[in-house]
Length: 143
Image (cartoon, rainbow, N blue to C red; front, side):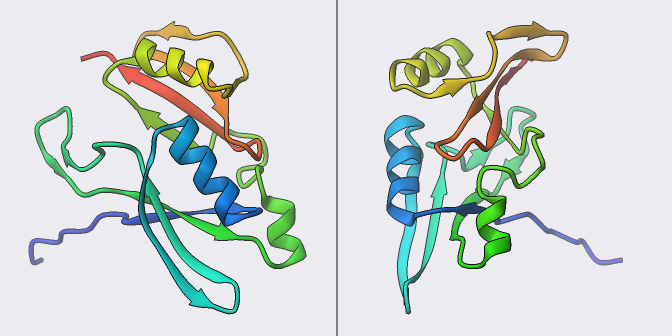
């Protein structure tokens, strides 16, 4: 088999409103707005990504950036999934190289945390929510 190279470039996150989601992610989580293209008829192609998220992984391999595609809900089924795409489970995992820096910054900006930070055998972690209630892990792995 040929040398297969694949990566996930985007993960769709269903949101209520493009602009309020962009504001939350860029202002409270310091994500970068990668692209915001008007597709007409109220649709946009909106990509966001954590800061400095492309480049080398902690294990030394190269990594392509994975973006979040903010997808505005338009049907009753999509609207019902806002904030609950995984039926209450943590949906996304935000890895960091400085847990306490990011936790304290997010806390100061009013991000909602579901628990106190905890140290696990694999690293330091805390569950937080985005503006719609989507659950995330903020996580710093042990080296």
